[in-house]
Image 1: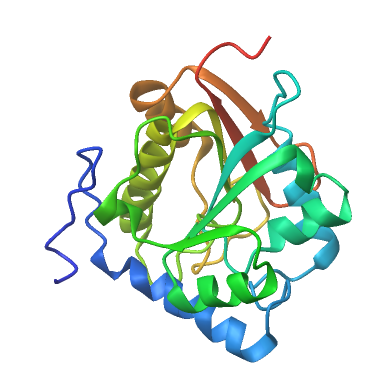
Image 2: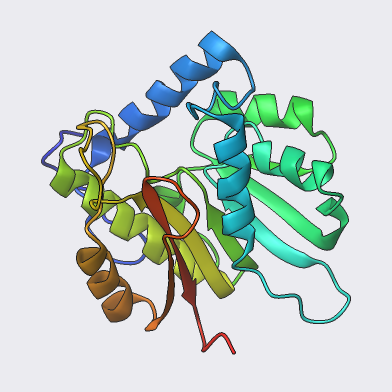
Length: 228
């Protein structure tokens, strides 16, 4: 496939970015350099990563005593599982991790053999409708690497739509903010008004925007129903 050929995702959105695999190769290179650590997932700070994961989990509402099912989309080597274990919270969840990289998934399975991990391209394969309570996408949409802004935005829209169709209650994802002193060409700075316009039109009007945790990004919670 060429860059111009486009890919029709299961939600009917033309991603137009068949080279999104460049992002995967970028992260695989980091993994080989630094191992299954926060640096291996291209995060500059372990403390900031923990803050991001805490914010991501703020999406979730427990309904009774049964574990909540979560899909960790773009799971990498399973650092969310490490965080849940450290917080003594893993028993509260039925965990499922998906990543496009077979190398990442193989590493995640070695590190957490009792958890469910899957290597899959969901823009090609799709996901069953409402197959999980919540979808978490931490860092999946923060780096565009070699993609152009328009290509990355189309990729982001496709990923979020597939994730939203797969959840019963909500999706959380983070992107870089445009409200910063300077931007980086390899990062995905998604203007808030463009993100919100897409989400309201294609997913849900029940949005929460988190810009209160001290990093140069924002996190969006997309709920299926009012979060009251």
